[in-house]
Every structure is written in structure tokens, then in C-alpha cells.
Image (spheres, rainbow, N blue to C red):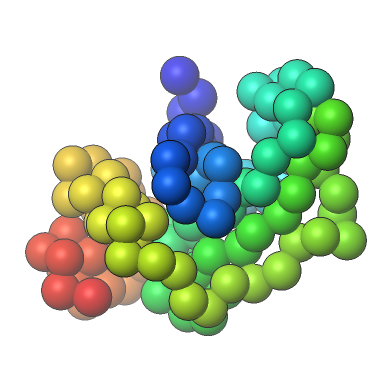
Length: 118
């Protein structure tokens, strides 16, 4: 288990994996560590950066991993995600309220995220 991010295998989504930031340390700065989780896989990965960026348009970032290495030119901000993916993220934060409380987010935003009001 990683202290900085949660790696979730997705099914029936346009992405193969979800990486959820668990601290204010951006997992995009940890790509070499994350690549170890993929070994030689090809995968579409979406990052949820809620605890870093809040609910802004750069909350979700997607990228491709080819043969276990991220292709930096493939990274883009994703403004719309499916309900199933959003529900996975929402449940994660509801079940890990301590991570939300310890984040750099405003008190108001922490409340909204923990109560699933966004």
C-alpha cells in the first residue's frame, strides 16, 4: 500500500486504472514510482487530484502508460468523467475523511467533499 496515492483497477471504464492522490504531494511528480506498479503493461490511467487541486477543471488528469512507461505527451486535463468513476472517487473520500481533513483544501470544500455534496 502506498502512502501517497491509491491505485484502483477499473472495469468497464474508458480508463484501466485510477490513481487517487492521498496527500498534497502530486502523484504526477511520482510517475517513476507509479510505473513500477505497471511493469510492462499498456494502460490508460486517470489521476484524481482532488486533495491537491480541489474541484477545479484540473481535478482529473489522464495519461497513457506504454510498456510500463508513461508517455508525457499523452497527459491531458479531463473535465468530464462518467458517473461510475465519480462514484468511486466520492466513496474513497467519504471512507477516508481523515485524508480530506489533513489536506490543504479550504474548510468549506472539505465539508462538501466529505458530505458528498459536490
